[in-house]
Length: 313
Image 1: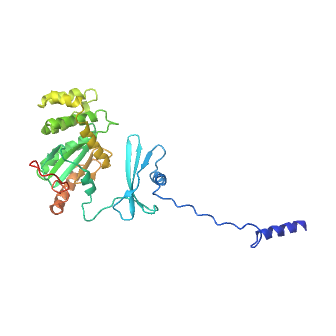
Image 2: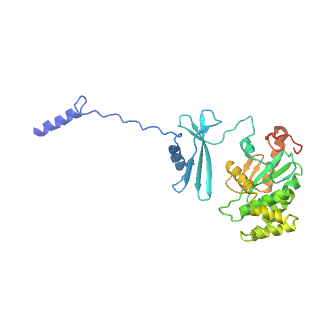
Image 3: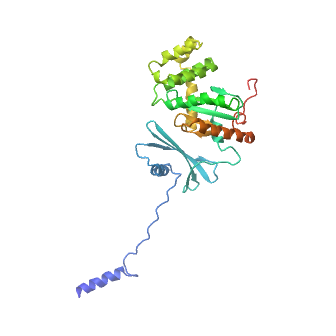
């Protein structure tokens, strides 16, 4: 009888209308927002499998070309490796888009064209050409040597009037110990004699296997003596690092364009981040030549830069 009463009491407490406290509905978890930098960092770490050994920096959101979305840059580094990502985050922070935004009324490579500065840079080919190639290169990089040889042997021979090539410095100092001195020397040569720069360019790549951080300076002075350069002027340029700002400006431009490796080639703004054979590159150039006959939105005659009228222009 005693046990039965206990059971009835327990049932009464648990039954509807009993004196037991009613179960409270669970509180929904607060929604995460990609506009919160910590939340976005955690999300992209999971997305790309970026462990704690990778340093991640998330930019502040800024206005974007995509209506209703803000642009957020994410930068990841691990030693010498870098990766840049751009995300578009909805105004409420709930949706993320990874990709590029294009305007159908303009060249799809306009953002790159706007950032590629070719004025006062070493070049060969025809001024005013409808196709412009810009190459970011490292004099100590063996892949750059192969691409440089390909460009020098084929561009002018195949396109005497339709293509112009510009050279930009991107010495990878972390892995190449004489790449930056070579870039500085190249700019010194270019300052003294723009035409001799391309002899220097070809010489460095051809002698790449024989050059070291220890013998580079002596070899450059030998080159100067053999190519009618003012050795005293060149030595002073090297001693004072007179061209350091020019090289660093080229490197900064590469970073802004998110160029992470060499060689990286741009064909009328179209990025080619890996080595490419001449047949494949020729196909891209031929396409651009035909396209620019009516588009007129790339190359050196695209009107992409506004310059002051001078006799030199």
